[in-house]
Length: 498
Image (cartoon, rainbow, N blue to C red; front, side, top):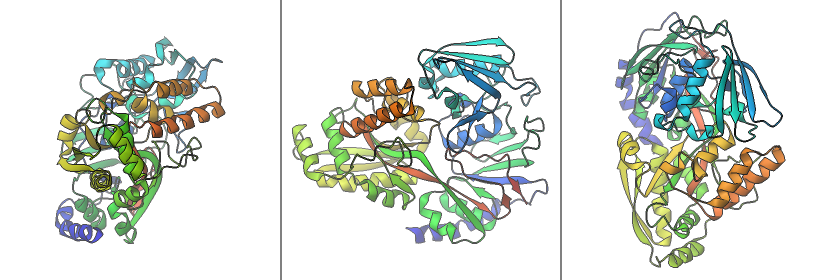
């Protein structure tokens, strides 16, 4: 497999060289992306390429550090009432949008009202069901009134879909974004490139250090490998695991990796037969060797897990022993009316190699319990449109979220926005636990509840989350001041290129 990628990379060198541009003395960083952003409206973003552009163009009220803790961004400070139901944010004064207008509290209120509006279609909407109202007592103050106590509220304001947008530009931001972030849009050519330039009025003095960024859309892995090798690009974002070892041996390139809570998984739609029967879902989960999938799908660049809570988390339930149990899986299928197994189609998105390999590995593993799997590969755009949330059985994956609640609730709670478009899982015990965790007042109480959630999720599975991934970027030696983020976005404010 790896030799094939080396050969492909060599074959793609000509293509990569054709992308080479003269070194910009002002410091323009060239970045390779695997896919084209579909929208630059933060509330509607769903894929990584959209997230990283919006992180650079827009700002949030808060920002998340490497440990997932909130720190000031457009909000310079905040306080919570004793019952944690009223949160008051004081905004920075004099911050300008890229068009020169001053940012104020009404922009913040409009941003969150859009996210909370069901017609917007934001996947972050469920995180703000706890908000009863938003007040703007003055130009530089925003007050969120919550329905329940919520200790992590400042953290969810730093999420991807909650970047602050201008109240007077809502109709055009999907293709012509105007934010308050460190960079502003120069040009967006879908399928080809996105060009940003330094925001000279960025509120943090002395940043960004780059004059600009050029993102090149390069769907072929081999082309991105060749481009970083030849210097056609300075940085390649989110490397697929199959080529990491190859690049580690390249002395011209620095490979930077960080653990995340991003995950891939097997989605079983409980609204479709035979996956409406929890015994079938449990049988399939018992047939999956998670450790083997880490090696097969990630080439070892990840960690087995029970749910999206990573083993590095203090909330991880290390008392659960996930193991393959073929006899028990067969019994469950027999009890569900499938003593000889059944045939099914497993859809996998083309161009998402880890999810393709999960499909291949799972199909092989499920033979042991009599489940015959036909794999159908679907182009990514068609997968999102026609497969995700509609078909019965497919592979999918999602990026890290800022808190455990935002990582879990949308996928596992019966009212969750992602749950209702993926596996349609309804479990009153999990609903009760997740609701309680949201209002837990102590870390000990929250830890107990999340460990209970993991046990229920293993006993009565929605699907299979076999592992969490590492996030890896590669950059040339001429790039300084860059560090990979567990949230998988690109923070280039301190980055320089020589």
